[in-house]
Length: 408
Ligand code: NAD
Ligand code: MG
Image (tube, rainbow, N blue to C red; front, side, top):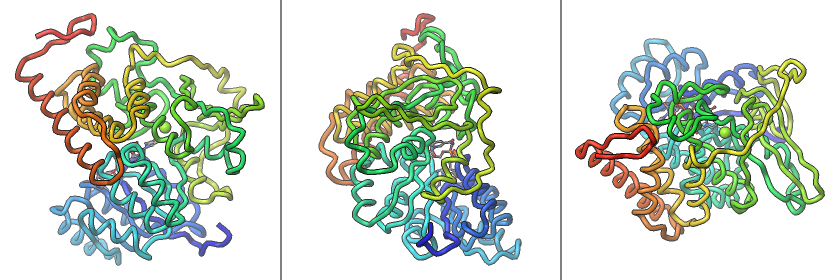
């Protein structure tokens, strides 16, 4: 931070979400170093206006064009100088402009790709929470960041942990593997047959982390860990067989790196994303995040167990897509987004999420992921395919049997 002009001008994309609110909390604790310059949200214009009243950014962007007038009028009524904007193209332009030097990419899903890519292309410090953009277009995104001198700091507790444990590029030569920890989600310990009738409300009730609905369901299926394996592959340039997953229900050890000499380094802390965000804002310095230190004597045991791939096949599907390569991870991600949205709307059951992803991967053969167009085409085809299976399921009236199988 020493050779950067302070305060940093921060763009918070996905400001009304879980990561967005944690980012704004850390920013507000460090007013001499961090300033909220741009806040962006999807369609929650009231939430965005409330944040503008508190944080008085220079710019506010709502993705939903039809909400522009409400944003503009609300800012005017509040007597704020914040400039209103609407639509993804406006966001992309602002992210690339002098309006900010640091971008918190915390939009959920592939919808975050264009703005995340714009931040990388413009050489911004990129606090990357939007893991779906890495899964979808990891090679292109990391190459763009390298070419433009954009520093990517992962805002995922596991990858942020590995980032902290692997500071020196030359330490990589002695790296044997990384171990991503997983809480196991709300259904840890259940067998497949015990997952037939779990509800969206149960799936989003995460035992350790408070997060948005989509990532909470991903945690319940273990697809979140699968996306994180692919994310780690791109961030740390490792093949899938050197990225392991270990279930750790206390969520205090956020991940580990193991070296060829037998040494393992871990990063620990309370499950609160403000730590990762503070690391992202200040690295290599440290700033206050509002998160307390660990009291290991009070927290007691640290347990570890292997993931149950039979009950939670999404993790294996993600390893498979990474091994296949090309557009397969994009297809996996898009089918999962459609399936999770349908599950949250009560249109499919929990076990159908993994089945839909598997069917879609089988139906859409992977091709080389050498251009953004190829990836976006795979993403679109995957969404159409997953949607069409959901519609035909409903037309045919499939029912889940108590053992987890399906029958008409
Ligand atoms: P969330 O649902 O709480 O918030 C999502 C944000 O994205 C909201 O501000 C919403 O307005 C915005 N948004 C949605 N669609 C948009 C669009 N089309 N254009 C612009 N903005 C749009 O989600 P979250 O839990 O904060 O997660 C955000 C991202 O961070 C996800 O990619 C998630 O995987 C990742 N992440 C989250 C956590 C966590 O603890 N919440 C941890 C690690 C990674
Ligand atoms: Mg994570």
